[in-house]
Image (cartoon, rainbow, N blue to C red; front, top):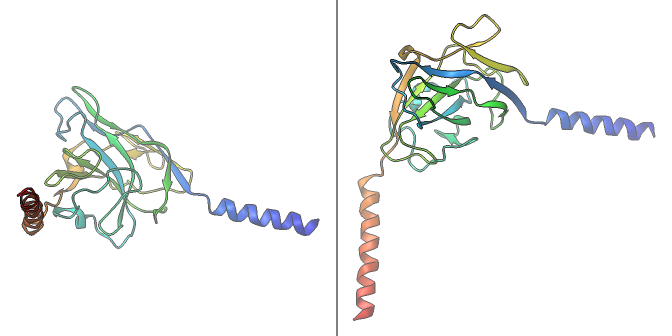
Length: 208
């Protein structure tokens, strides 16, 4: 009996250890007032993206073609050989004041995401469900945007106090880089056109 109880406790402990870690985000993380210095547009889609490895630099996402076309813009999607993982997606809302609210609770720390990883907000200009070829994007983050311990809460504030809240991004100084989604290579487009032409020719031949 005692052995069975100990076994049960051991199994339960292992299960607890393997439960996905999660954190809670509250408040308004991106805020652009009446002058809209961040040039936000209502309805734009952005994602909270995590840098999975400390050795990775954010600038690997800057420039042209660093993010491919046709990639998913949803939770748990990954960019750049899985070095960056989407925690949550969020839209810009508001009329005069454009805001992006925090994603909410139980943001899972999965796919290699862990305490101490940096996170940022990646804002697409036109992509909504998948990345659109040629679309441009901006990446914003404050220096204190780092994943805390499991079950912790990140509360964003324009005037954060030490250890109590995180900085709200509300000025162009928080823009760390921009990029353009890759465009299909001409060779790929040519092969596609050649294939279509071949199918048309085959259809015409069969009719004759």
